[in-house]
Image (tube, rainbow, N blue to C red; front, side, top):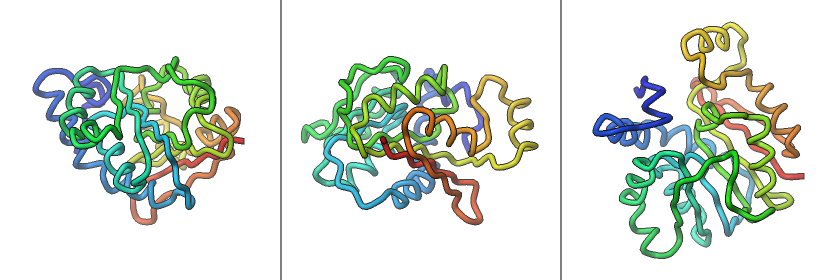
Length: 205
């Protein structure tokens, strides 16, 4: 299991590449579960925020065969890894990758049908404001799906993680839901039974 959260957020060197590879492999079940929970949609434009090694992007493009995707990440190493991992989709013209920050995204209002992100919201610099920026680039009735491999429905668990990882956005699931609601995303969250997986799915109002 990937334990070095600093390498997750800012992978560097050979160790960082190993971290990216490990996340691509380990995160498939939680990402797939999030995709399985999406409503019956046919998105044409998808954005993966904090795309990392590109696994969420790949699974989304495999599910939505008519879609084109964009992936952004603050890490140059992650973008380079994702370009290799998803070379097929780049070659087919179905994928665009580049350095980007969730705080200021270079996309017009309402550009995307679906925005996805796996666990990157734990590292966003100003989560409530960043979610407003996410909502800005989603069209009316578009979807935002945030997945994670850890779920926080218990205050004691939140306190434990905050002590262990003080720089991470650790909060109750209902708090994240509230932030998404405040950003204009009508949100529900669910946890997969017998796992720690959680996904928040918001609809742009």
